[in-house]
Length: 334
Image (cartoon, rainbow, N blue to C red):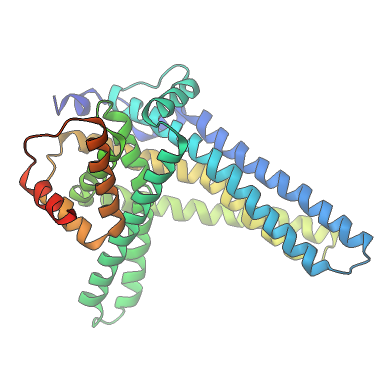
């Protein structure tokens, strides 16, 4: 049964990405809405600056930055996270069954409601997984720096290595979320914990995928940045803006670059990493001693594991025994 999913896979990452474009467009629309709100707010504060004849221009500008930040967080973080979860659910189905659901938006929405009692549960799991991986990444980075620090040019080598690792680890939460959707009968926190462990066990295979894709991501990001700055820079010169207006155009260019990158480039990378992950995860026999080892270097992973145990205690009767690795770790937690 473990090999059933891998055998059924008939879609590669490019096919899945193309067929799940509705979610990519949804991410882009949300981003553009946040940009539009930011532009409207800028016009409003610019008008206030004109009314006051330039008095308080710095204050109005700071107010605009604050209002833009809040708007961006609400639209792209809260609603964007829910869209991302729906996208992950559909990608998981596509990888494991070999086909994309017909009404994928409704399917994604239903799966998110089914697996998470509230959006707060999803946000908490996403945050804990992200923090866990970041802490693990920092430990590996320090270890690599210690081993290579004496070599000439090691700093540049380490910087490139950290870049590739950070790109690959950025999508661990989506992979773990996909594992949660796949394990329909298992509790969400438990699947998230197992998902991190599975990722750690398959790091070589996953880093290979990340290494190949990183060059594409970096290249496309550079092209996107050049195009965005060129278009808005031309507009800047044509209108003849200067001062804070020019700085606002610069910030808008940064903002748009981030929006397009998240919608297209990040979605593509996510699909590619998830495709590799969901192909190797079902055939992975979890090494139970990794729970304790990962918890020793990551407080967030330890917290995630503790919540998975609390979740099990709240919903299931006590079990007679646990695998040695988990039982010893439970004893440490008390």
